[in-house]
Length: 139
Image (cartoon, rainbow, N blue to C red; front, side, top):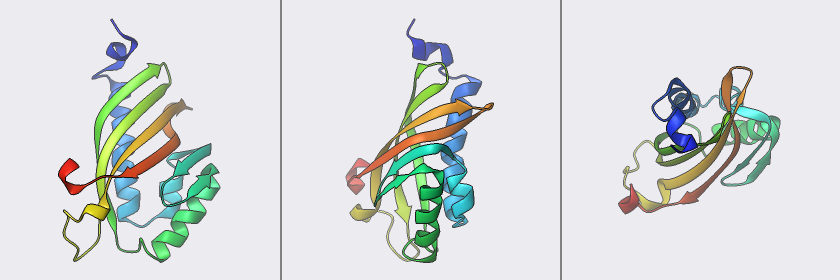
């Protein structure tokens, strides 16, 4: 039995997947505080920029939600959750940014992402996140 099989389909996996849905919800509300609260204190996020720490994520997203991300949303689908050891999960996702009035199959809006999550104080937080552009055909 692999280590992943121990947690596959478990409450732990469900909790990790729930964080992905919380990302969607915080983005839909354009809520930088709720978005940043999903990240570990010393997390790293690489997307449109390099962000270090929860406060760095919060600051970047606050500017984004007041500017280019205002009124947008994201749809994110976990493709795989892999537990590398107790309290550490790799999450591989695909998704797209949703912009009102822009077709969902617009290629520049599609992405794949890798996320490292850690268990802290009874919950899961994002420790590292990085995304890459995808084509709409990939989605």
